[in-house]
Image (tube, rainbow, N blue to C red; front, side):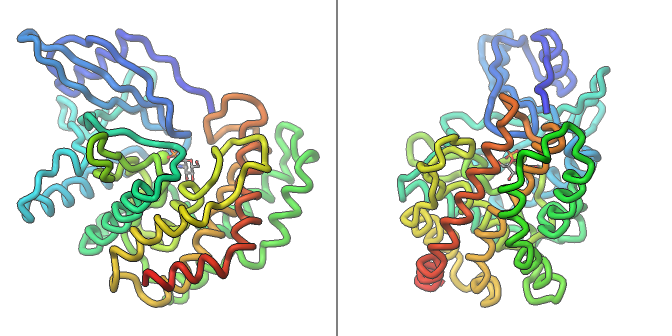
Length: 372
Ligand code: GN1
Ligand code: MG
C-alpha cells in the first residue's frame, strides 16, 4: 500500500473543515503505523497562541466503511471521557478527543475521496517501537488491561465490526490459500518454507475461534491492535497514559489483545529485522507486560481466559505472520511497505517469534500463573 501525497494547502483546507482556527504554521508526517496516513499539524492563531492536532486519513482499502469506524470511535471515546469525569479525573490526556466537521460529521471526505479525521494532539507524550525497560512494559500492560476493564460496561451492541473476521485465524488461513492459488504477482513459488511452517500449525489455528464460538471464551469490547506503539507514554512520568489507534475497537477476545501485545512488545528486534538471529521473545519483557495486564486486572479475567493467554500470544503472532505473507503474495496491497520484500521480512520475524514462543511455552505459563 502506497502513502498518499498531500500538499500543505490541502492539509490546511482539510483542517478548516473541522473549524480549526488560525493558519497552518507547520506540519510533520508521523510514520508509525502500517495503515493510515498521519500528520501532526500546528496552527497559529491571530493572538499568537498555537495548537497541535493530529490529522489522519483513514485507509479506505482496509476500512471500507469509515462511517462505522468513526461511529465506534466517537461512542467509545465519549464513554471513556464520561467515565473519567465521573471519577473526578481529567480526561484530556487519557482519551483522544475527536472533532466534528463544520457540517457535524465525524470525518471529512475530500474531493479526491480521501476520508479525514482530526483529533487533539497529546503533547509531551511519545510512542515507542522497541522497548525492553520493564517499567515501561508493565505500564503498557496495565493500560491495555485497564482499557478492557473500563469498557466492560460499554453496551457492546452499539459497536459494529470495522473489519469482519479480523482475528478469525482460520479465515486468515483461507485468505493465504486463496492468495497462493491466485498468485497475482508471481511470488507464491518463493515462499514454500514459510507456507510449510503455517501448514504444520493449521490444526491449532482455530483453537481460540472455536472456544469463543462454543461460549467458553467471552466476547468483550477489545482493542484488537495492541501494539506497544499504540499507547502513549508520558515523557515525564513514563506512565502509559492513553490508548490510541481505536479503528479496530469492537467485540473480540481478551486473549487476542494480550497476545498481540506480547507479539510486538516482547520481540527482541524490530518487526522487519532481516537478521533473524537477533529475533526472539524476551521472557523478561513477557513477565513485565503480564504483570501489568493480568496482575493489575486481578479477578477480571475468567479462568478460561487466563488458561488461554499463552495460546493468544502464539496465535496472534502466527496470524500476523500469515497476514504479512498473504500481503506479500498479493503484491503488498494492504500494509504499507518501504521495499519489495518488506512484508516477507516481516512474515519471517513473526515466524521466528512463533518458534521461540513454542520453546518457551511452559515458562510463559508459569508467569501467567504467578500474576493471576
Ligand atoms: C497494523 O496500524 P498498525 O500499524 O497499528 C494492523 C494490525 C497488525 C499490525 C502489524 C487495521 O497495525 O492488525 O497487527 O499492523 N492493523 C490493521 O504491525 O490491519
Ligand atoms: Mg492500526
